[in-house]
Length: 448
Image (cartoon, rainbow, N blue to C red; front, side, top):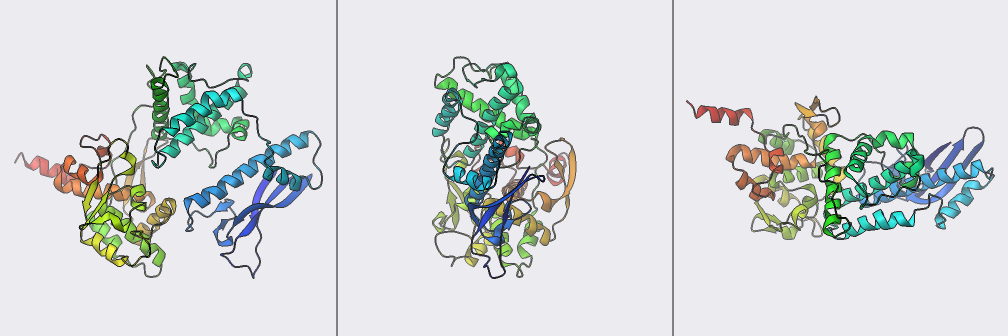
């Protein structure tokens, strides 16, 4: 049985006018159904291969996620309904149309959630999230953790017959259970294939892929934060993380960033044939000259330019340290702001969705002719890989470029941190700076 999503277009149809998405179900030679859904998309935005919004079109993350979520929810619902009704001999003409009516009427088809489960994990985790600033970007990663724990719960029920009514109860979790959870997180990409019911119960909008060591460590850190909160709030007496050592300490390769000459080359490159890409080039170069995170970059307005400087409070640390970061603008950054001074509204620059911005950066660097090979650390194999720098370029490389080039000149972490929002003794700062061969030569020259 195969489920696919498609659109229909005509020669007279305008690309900017939304059209409905159709769902198509084929089961060998037994059945073929095709019906219209309530999902609407622009034809020029539709990716027939991946059955969703194209990655490189100018579309808000919210709109893209909305379409992707709806398609996956509908796919899961129809697959579950077909499996159940086929086993009962209830498949007949008009079945898909009736199933879609049930779906839009809110008729549940998925596994029934156990009330005990909702109270012990889902509701408790939601309460934990209520105390976190919803604007902090990492909050969405906690939602990923929540769904992962719920899928782990379902995995235990499906893989262990005697645990068919298993409930993830924080009060009962032991250090040994944490070892099992760790193993599940590492191997989830394979386990969801071995036990398809896991995803039927708790689907993910994206395909679950093999996780690298740093990703697993990040998830475990968030899980530890959840249990620390449970202990603080009195929901458990003994924290199972006492004595748990797995998933500790990320590993990072040598920081990769653009040199000052490379940044000038990117800024001087001719993008007149692609004004949209030229605008994103200007934004990237501007970010390389002020060093803020992409989330802070996207929310900058004209009001944040004060006395020739950019002033903002980093969103990532606003709860722990609401320190205002002031970055004086250099000549390159000032020239870019002058270029877009007549941009309507309060936006400082013509920002687009962060994911589209990252795709654009790779195209920008390649077109600018910056192709030098860099050595990166493969997150899965932990082995070195040689890749052209444009393949690894991203919005965060702008922050590394800012920090790396300034640190190379002043060699003072405290001074550079005042421009980036890092705390004076930040352990994360080392991931951005690089002790290169020129700096080492200066050090050994002291001995002459």
